[in-house]
Image 1 (cartoon, rainbow, N blue to C red):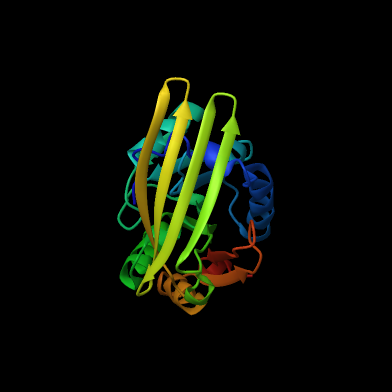
Image 2: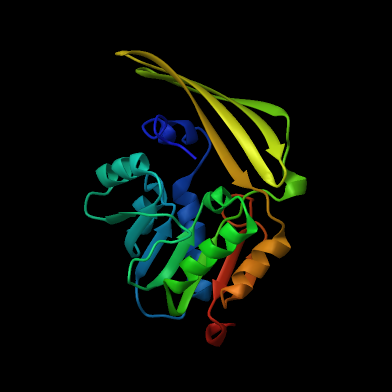
Length: 239
């Protein structure tokens, strides 16, 4: 995965359809249903540019971790008083535990093997306090993926023009998206290509990863925006 060029235009691209505020409100409702701790520490794994945390910080003492340093630059500018960490979701170790651990906007899909999926879920679960809750938004299942397709998204603002064309394909259990960008600003026009590879896992494989990490698992079918949401709690805290 690479956001070396697109980090600065990422929010503008997704602002055309993604409502982070309403998603955060829905997330808070689910957290209230499952969390049994009294604390308010929340860790967002693969936090990206910090857009969810912008709203979650109103209710929690938040931190973020992300693999891409370019995304963290934007997140730190947005939320200068929040602690952000650079790390791989399979292996990060913050020597801390949290009341809530989240991994949203299908970022878990950047795990492209079952072993990687299991490592990521286990690493997140190890950062969870007893009584806490972990919430993970999945990527598409194999039968949901529309391979050999092309999509376009545009931004037309006074001083920012973006055209992004995405060609999607599949390699085994991995969805592959080649993203062709043209970005225009008052200083000029740039073009670049980024490739994103994301694992296509079944619901059974997600559930198995959660259970292998020692979590009692539930699945909210709608989730935050229709992709569903996996929810895990330590067994002594199961409802």
